[in-house]
Length: 241
Image (tube, rainbow, N blue to C red; front, top):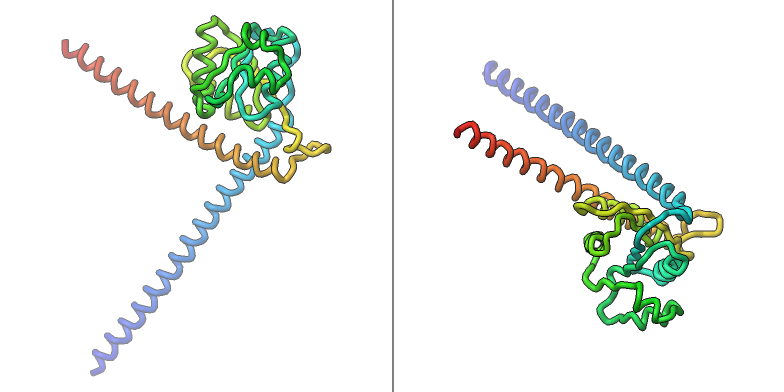
């Protein structure tokens, strides 16, 4: 009877210790997850602040940019108007408007911007194929190669510049790009701070930039791994011969 009581006490003590260790492990896991989440949130918040600051500090390039061509990414009347002005002032030989809606004609764009249709007929090309920024980058590169252009002025909204440059840099044999930011009035206050709409747009664009960076990094990893496998296969065949 005494032995049975002792065994029961030992089991009870063991069970209590087991529950105590489980609670302790759970608390440590909770703290670790919390700290990891806090660190990730702090990193993302800091990255967003840097992104917003960099966008706010973007400036137009000097007049002596010496670009061969001008590319406007559709998405706002201000972008196209700025591109037309640059073309008129001789900042590029031709202008590409990338991502145009298929129902929009050159005449309609000429009327919208108050431009002589003769300028569109001689020096403006419309790209109806690009559906997103990736497509914009690919079509702009093809257009540049077709005309022998090595340096482009890229006209788009200031918040769109970082992602546009990332996409252009990821296209093989892309020409040199000089960003020409356009600042939408409704996104910035007079004191230089973003409006509520501007803040939401910046946050959305920052998330897209992170997604592009992740995609590009993964693509490079996969490509490098594939090249190593091909090189190893070729090397093994050479040694076998």
